[in-house]
Length: 306
Ligand SMILES: C[S@@+](CC[C@H](N)C(=O)[O-])C[C@H]1O[C@@H](n2cnc3c(N)ncnc32)[C@H](O)[C@@H]1O
Image (tube, rainbow, N blue to C red; front, side, top):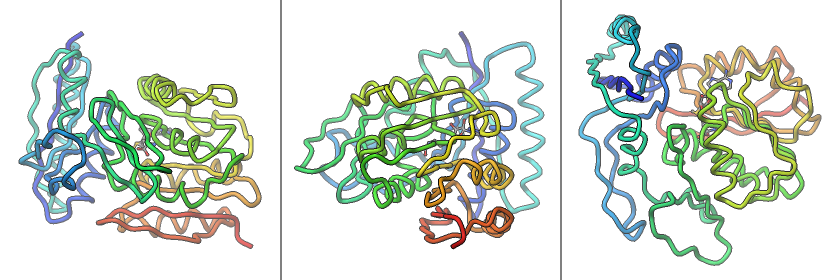
């Protein structure tokens, strides 16, 4: 099958805000395999055996099946992206036709072994890494789904999972992407886990990655669904690494599934949207007990008000 690769190359002083806005527009047009490419410093020496290729530009890339409608969709995307100039984000959109087999692996050259904490390391399947005693290695092949651990929103969630998951805890991951958070939780001892995503490809990739990491499937439920269509079971930990515009409206559904002493880890939030999230927490009698930040991104740990 052929796809249209859509590249939004952008220039701005606020890269995180631009990433969030462009990803939101890409998701709203149902683009698949959305990745953010921004120039980053070289990884620590000794991580992996190959040199990372650093992108030259800030770009968000996504894919659309190449159908009769794809050019119309791209022109609508261009129109929405042009409106970002009001927020001092200049976007230039390029598109090209690619074969699925070519693009599905193109991003791999940017993904290296990534240390998240002293204990947690994310390792792409095709890289070498010898674990130190006691390290948790997350083997990941995100395929077309989001979640390599290199993005601040994911790495903050992984670090917060290390603080909150103890053996036997139950977990719900809203927007499981590559399954990276579920794998981390399972390796920290979580037992019953549910992962949902609106993207069927992400759910497939999560299933494959759980298998690659030797995570037993009894106690694991995966589904292509939104949270309101997911059974109202209570979980000790709920993760939602999406974006603030998605998280704030589903706060009642999150609250309904949070165990009395449970914690929700909310990520994918940029500083500018924090007040929307705090307002949504308030309506559900939830409060923030920890705030992590990396660049412009924020991840919150929330619980019921005591
Ligand atoms: C930023 S990625 C996070 C992936 C992974 N959990 C991580 O932390 O790296 C967000 C994921 O949420 C999914 N998503 C977007 N809106 C959603 C919604 N309303 N309900 C469930 N999943 C959603 C996307 O398809 C995507 O896979």
